[in-house]
Image (tube, rainbow, N blue to C red; front, side):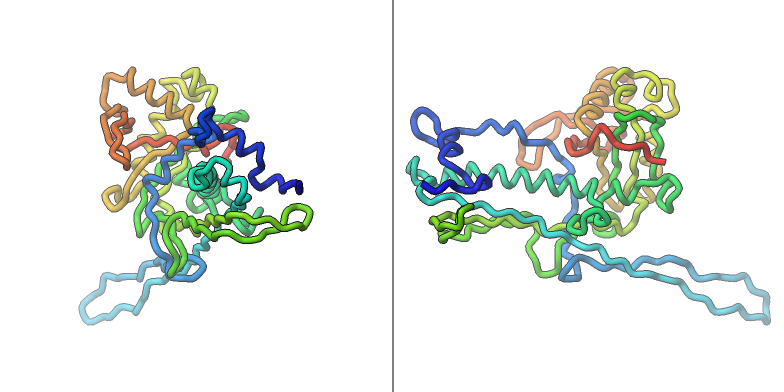
Length: 339
């Protein structure tokens, strides 16, 4: 029998998905992550086939006090245009027709594979949303970490220094989502969100160039990041994770760089909170420490409130001064120091 390529499902893969009764097993998704930033992100249709172009005002006109009988010079404002490119996130799945038939329920077998692809697409998009750098890989979108990477840059006033200087730094983000602030565009005329297309059955070659019948699936997601107003994202960087866990050093309760202090300062960096949807984003470790702080606090700056998920499921929502705190597993704990 011809050996299938290792990136296609094999008989061994099929056998690992069977319950003793012959039905497709419910897979324990140990690789799934919590990336709740996708619950808040605003998606907008771009005005270009490759992304979105917007116009920014870069200068105000000059105005004057004048004396009676004297005129004033003419003046004007200045603008510039910015293009934000989208990327095409894509994957393909080929499953041998006979392999899918073995358990008598090919739809269930394909669904078990689809869920893994959808999770991989979510994780990859969030990773690029945060860390994408077209200078290193032109296929990527320009992520937040790349945009907010220098304290001396024009947007450096929206980067708050947590004081960490070791190798276990992380960041907390405050983002104000909105059509005129920060959003995720998709190309003009395309479909918002992840597209799943059943391409049907076709003869495809194996690794040796021999053909077999396969069920083909295409997964595609055209997405990008548009920072129309950089003032609506604040990065709290250089947070020393070990200090935070130990509540010592740069993250001692009395330290000026304590995370709660910086989160309060971050809110005041947002020009008009009422025109956007605000949320804080942190990795699981930081989120856990903030929940502990919420339980220990006597005041109401940090709170744990009852809420419903987008699917109507009850859960406990942590808030800081009324702004939701979200878990994002793609935020790392080994960031280089922002300088």
